[in-house]
Amino acid sequence: MMFAFRIATSVGIGHLMRMKWLALELQNRGCQSLFILDEQSENLFPFLAEIESELVYLSNSPFSAQEGVQEDAQQCLQLMEKFPDINTIILDSYDLGIEWERVIKSADKKVVVFDDLARQHYCDILFDAKWLGADTPSRYKDKLPDTCRAFLGPQYAILSPAYKNNKNERFLTEVDTKKVLMSLGGGGDLNIIAKLVTVLYQQVTVKNELEIIVVIGPKAENIALVELIAKVNPQVTFLYQPKCLAKYYCQTDLFVGALGTSLYELAATKTPTITFSIAENQQNNYCDLADLGHYFHLSTFDARDAQQVEYFSRLIVSMLDQLPRTRALRAEPTFEVDGTGAVSIVDILLDADSQQIPSAKASSTQYTSDFSDDNERFTLNDSMYIRPVNDKDINHYRQSRNLPNNSERMTIQTEIHPLEHYVWWFNNNRQSYVLYQNEQPLLYIWHQESLVNDKQYIYGGWFTAQGEVPFNVAMLALKWQLEYTQKLFPQGHWLAVINKENKFVNLLNKYMGFSTIAIEDKSFQITQKLFPQASVADFNFVELNFTELSFDTSEE
Image (tube, rainbow, N blue to C red; front, side):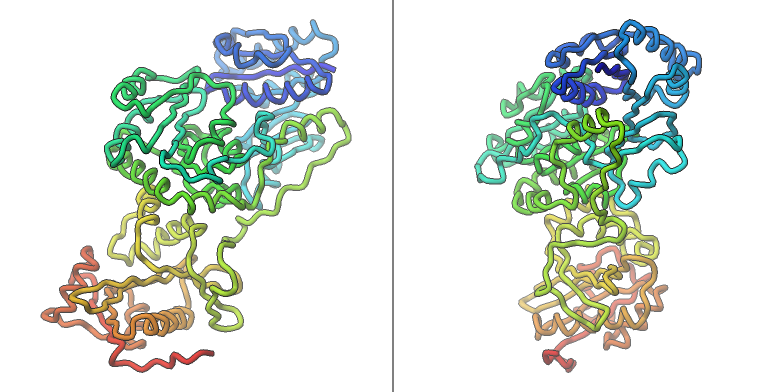
């Protein structure tokens, strides 16, 4: 049996590499393959050395024109005529789509498509490894022929055989020198990495304690910029056009780079990761990424923005300084990627009667976090409880704080950027909790201690996790917080600021015993230092002294 592959490499080599591993698995099953590639792909021949495939290069008119697409399809059909055993053509291309597929199908050929953009298709089988939680099964609703079989989810991610049961070795060791692997995939502008590395080494106290390995893809731009940096920092080394990164992922403490096929490769090796999107198909929902054990992603990263580069570098340092935390986030994902996607796909291609393999259970239909146990819960009633915030809450915490009904009432009303939030998360002294009602997160509540002249001051706040919170729920949460902090800080003095327009919270705090702070009072000056963005014109300054109150703090 023989398969034809039509692969576009105009945006990088990710498509080529995953089809290579698929062809290799087919080859192991006794099947042959024909690779039909773009003309500019000839320099990628070394990446195809392992497979025994016929290679053909096409020179095409622009794919944006329908005539060019049809011409490409006709050329493919002509090539396939030379190989009578080919009945199926496998398409992996963003440039070619439904019109190309119609031409191939009209010639009575079987079409198999790999996609991750949820486009319309006219094919017999479709594979898409992208994970959208509970929405994954409906991703191609009304976009495929009724006879098409769709196989969706990360279990169909095609990886090198090297990823099968191959986990990060650094989890088992503690070494003085930290290793960071940086990559933009097969292409990309390495000026992004050059700027990041330059600032990063300015922040590292002992330079020889950080080793950076930069991957140089075959289509990379501005290679000279990172090579110049290596002359100044000998700890920077390079991997030129590696065929597989599995062993390097397993020997690194942190991966930094573009999100693409690396998402599944890093999930398979469980390597701590910071990624950013440089292409349309790299946009992902934070909860969906968390299902794969990946919590640090930027939908955009502008290396021209000095502040973003500064925060990014600080995040790298913070994650390296606290590796046990970042490794724990990787350790037990909702959805395991085991590196056997190519095997599963070939099973399907060679079995005409195969049906879709069920997807893993999705956790993103409702936000959950499983780091805590029942011993950490504070039960309020039959339907509500409070638990400490943990690292798995990192993205939901920021998304909740940025909700308009929260941010417009805060001292800082601008949206918090992921980079700023991630850096803060690893370096703050805040004690945060989340209140659940009927297993749904309803609000976050936090407090922090500040010592001034050996006197305990406590300040804090809360914000909703979804929509508005009923008065009785907010009151219950605040009552719990005051009773809890009184046990911790019996001599404590609460300080807070409340937006004057927020009548709900002003009424709530007054009901709980807070009183207005006089401007001439020392507490007023301390409150201003704790909340420097709070103006007297827009916020009420209030206080509560535990020594003057009597809560019932007996155990339930």
